[in-house]
Image (cartoon, rainbow, N blue to C red; front, side, top):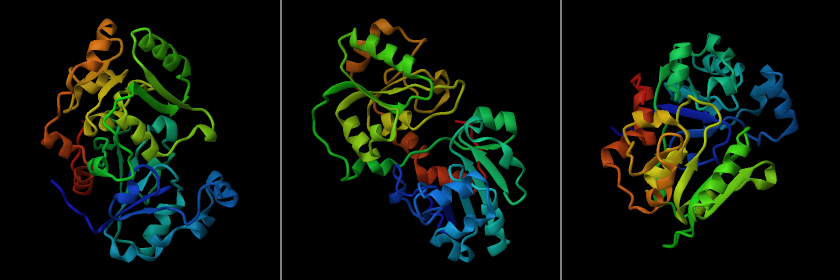
Length: 299
């Protein structure tokens, strides 16, 4: 299902985040960091003057048939600007976060042709198109990841507080009471932040990833995909995960459903590898093919 889709441009807040630097036809929305005071001010007040900070992509719009805008950094005037430059271009807004987090006011933006979400609960509620969450499988081969053959930790976690701190701390205590070693990185301030490749290097030294969702029901975070592509076990509180193609009881432990008394043996039993077809299905190239061709999927 791989397709380069060279006539599609993807715009997001920062290209340097996660794995996006390695993807084709991806550009940052703005030519300076979002920490810029004036840029932040324009975003806050949804000002049309935001175009001053648009990146180099604004000079290339005539060469694309489709633009996919990610929700982070979105401004109501971006679609209007794009259509002004190329009236025939198709504009897709991709909600990579829940509408509860980002707000649903842009649903009525007349310059947006299609709105898609990874969250099938939001898709049903707001009558949007749905495409599964995705990952970039080739990141596993990246030379930016420090590797060794030793699993120093049993369980790793990285994430912001988001009102789930007590849940995470209590779970850490329960895991440690089962003689499991945890490496939990809770981001409270900027000084707690670690880069994505540093996180992946930590992940390589762990047997299992913890995925705690602060709002349920919800779609999937990146954690289940990191687990699948890096062949790590997963502990999650997202019960909806049983509906996804890669779900395997041997690899995925669901909090509140599976027997916690068996958590030690779950983590230490061998990983049951997922088929290549399923890995391909959730890869970025397949996600891009589906969204570019209007293929609506729930899982």
